[in-house]
Amino acid sequence: EDRITELLVRLSRQRFARLAWTVHFQEPAGYTAKDPASGRGGVGVPDVRVTKDGQTIAVAEALLVTSGSAATEENIREHVHKLFGYAHEGTSVLFLLLWSFSKKPHDVIAAHSRAVATPPDGFERTEARLVDADGACGGVRLLRADTHTGGHVVAHFLVDLQEQARRDA
Image (cartoon, rainbow, N blue to C red):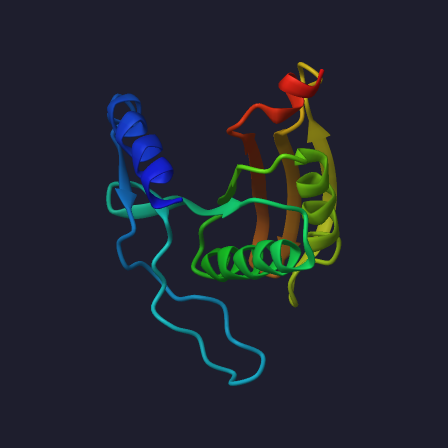
């Protein structure tokens, strides 16, 4: 997961520099969402953070998935909750990067759908749609969530790294 995400960051830095944006890879920033059991959050270390003039404008969390199992569903849910912890810091654009190495990518999509069916406490999902232009498994799932601090755009990218869906077609 880290190697793939770091490659994305390195490529993005060149493009985003034209906009005077800086892309950071795994640097401490903000705080994670509070753990319901302990009531405490920790120092946040998002996988990717984009800043302009020192202000965070976007945050991304990434994870590697290999199946559509219950464990994968829970892992996705945990990352979504962690990601929403950064929303409370004023960041309104959030990304979830799902790097899939599954032989059954449709199962990963189903696990993702179950994991994001209910937003974290304090958030209300107002819109969800799958954007899948070429009919391949994966694509972009756009969700919008609103809180008392304002709206947040959350884009979930599911990348089928094995292109298993294309192989099966």
